[in-house]
View 1 (cartoon, helix red, strand yellow):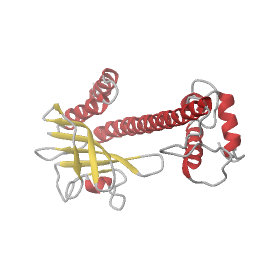
View 2 (cartoon, rainbow, N blue to C red):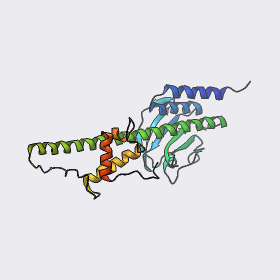
View 3 (tube, rainbow, N blue to C red):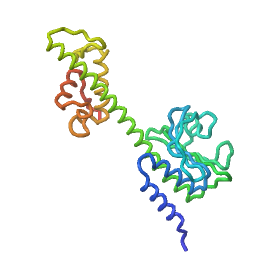
View 4 (cartoon, helix red, strand yellow):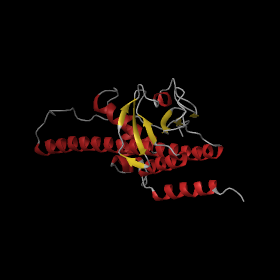
Length: 255
């Protein structure tokens, strides 16, 4: 009679992925790996830099645990994250530890963006079937981690755009009020925006670089719900006018 275990494992994986939402997927997959490998502890985390990491999913004795940040020095995860030590796949152990399994997660540019660590109280033996399932999980984790990072970058970009928009609006309101009162008002914090200024300094430079970042992030789409104009809080015509004033033009080789 054929072995139904691989099918059962895939069904369990599909069930956990379907039930999980948002960042809860990392915890769900940590619990799945814990059950699959009969591991006492599983960590799924991301690299903050070569010296620090944070967990995204933790399972201890089959139960989910709170996430935390930690220094990499002296931990088994150090070799999985640091660029000069990172492995290209799973390892059988750390320092000869037969109860440990480590896996590096690589982004599209080949750099390590995350890791998976599993530890067992006894010897951790991984069968060919389990290796295949771990490979599927690693693809899911890599994709989800890349998506999470993109969402963070987008949120930071949106916050930066809103901050700049508020600053520009405040300056423009001040200039309108000064013009209406007929009193020349020297700004107390920042000079007025001069879109014809050709020197890459001050607010002119900040505005130009910010608009370029938003244009690149939206693949130079100006109009629509995903366009740069909406993200910058401008009308498309206003954005095009400012691009012209700031000398921003799309090069032919740009995607």
